Length: 304
Length: 236
Ligand SMILES: Nc1ncnc2c1ncn2[C@@H]1O[C@H](COP(=O)(O)OP(=O)(O)O)[C@@H](O)[C@H]1O
Ligand SMILES: [Mg+2]
Image (tube, rainbow over the protein chains, first blue to last red):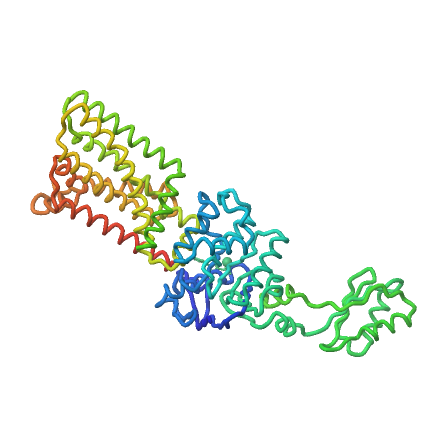
């Protein structure tokens, strides 16, 4: 559905994108993950035809964004990073304007449907300037959905929302995946693991990793970590005990009888640890695996 | 064309909820009423010629105020991103903005028809010059508004847009003075280029196609340049 190859973008002397290539299949929700300044917004602006690339090609639904910009734009819904709203218009008036601009037929019905989808129908006659941040974001989404586009491009769609609203928006996006192709960008990790079918990690204008959220996690998980909380144990003795066990790579003393034990990938040393601890007559208060969070993976990726 | 009208329509709606538009329209009509009354009182002549002549100077400031918001505010608010990624051509955006401001201006002129109407009651005016005078006002206004659209495309700041507009219009207004410096044959060219040299005939009752073509050319050139400015902004 979307094909990006060797995309570069210069702002003056500054190179914001360096040879970015990727494909997005129909029905995918692609997460574009990267810290601020990584080049997410730049990529999306090129995809939507807002600005041309310095070099490289982008096709959306078979149309080239530079030579067939209007055809591409007809098939896109776009929610820019700063939600583009006219404060002096009402919610309904704004959607009506966008529907006309997009040449939507059966305007009234489509507007009602879009308002229903993002749950803003009860605010139809409210002036946009008076809307809360959450409602503005929803209205931005409604505008992007209005014409039922094949491809949706959402730049940081949950930024500035409260946790409940974030969950709502994520559900909404997941619900869209059946008949839309979605690209969303975020610099917040939980977002991608909860919404996306595939993730691209971008840093300093380059794609540094790609895969399903699970695969990415597994790929970076070089080891299994186990958290152990003991009672009545002598600190150094416990440490030595763990180090003496087979298959244990490292021991982290967290203080107050807590340890993090690292063992080889694909092994689970919990039974051995439990037995050894009980044999010494110490209390075992807690014993659980520590999954390396995407957050840590991300830190790893972008600090490399 | 449909897109152009959609954009013009939104612009007109925005004017009608904007205090600036009301204040400017009211001031325009109040000043016009003042000129009208004074001129009528002293000259006792049933004509709009001098009133309209005075209003051209007022228009020089009014037009950039009406247009200052048009593209500058879209760029400041980021809504330009919406327009430039919608299936709409850049020139349709610019033309829509221009038509929006022209409509408001035409409404102001429409309300001011009250003054010639008064003349037909108190006197027996010659209708021809009044009609051509209003045609001239519409063309001159259109030219000034298009120049305002152009300066509005150059900045995100409405005040900067208005000031640039006034400066550009005054320069084009006075460009005929250059002719006095250079002398013939260039003076004729500068004379023709000046905004100020093309409305007196209208007010006297003459519609000269050269004047009409002049104003339409200014409009076309200004809107073309505004479109180009919008396009090059994409490249930044
Ligand atoms: N219009 C611009 N002019 C100059 N530099 C820009 C412009 N837009 C973005 N940049 C720079 O390009 C880099 C990528 O920006 P952006 O794509 O907005 O990143 P992200 O959306 O991932 O935070 C940043 O370093 C930013 O400062
Ligand atoms: Mg961004």
